[in-house]
Length: 103
Image 1 (spheres, rainbow, N blue to C red):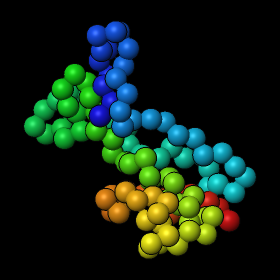
Image 2: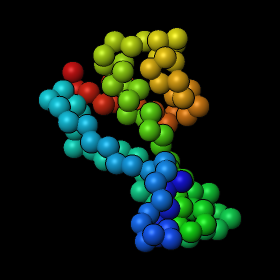
Image 3: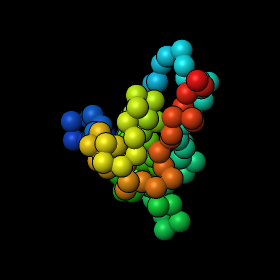
Image 4: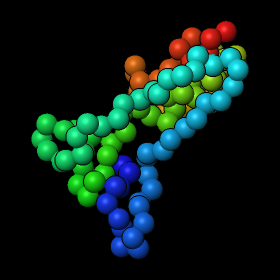
């Protein structure tokens, strides 16, 4: 998880979290994808907030790359498994080409 609290060197610990930008003419743009947490406090009712300000991402890194791979012609199955081997671990948490591209 990404640590929001500073580490011992006054920096942030790097882990799962990151921002990504998709840029191009064929995109179905103007959207922010994923979810921004509304609560950063660790509690039994907040499964994404861990200790020291660590947050579990709601969408995997593979989310936008699956649709991009489809756009490049990679088909679901063994081909997609070679390109994004972890994508099957996140059912319903990836975007397909139709969601990302307008043409």
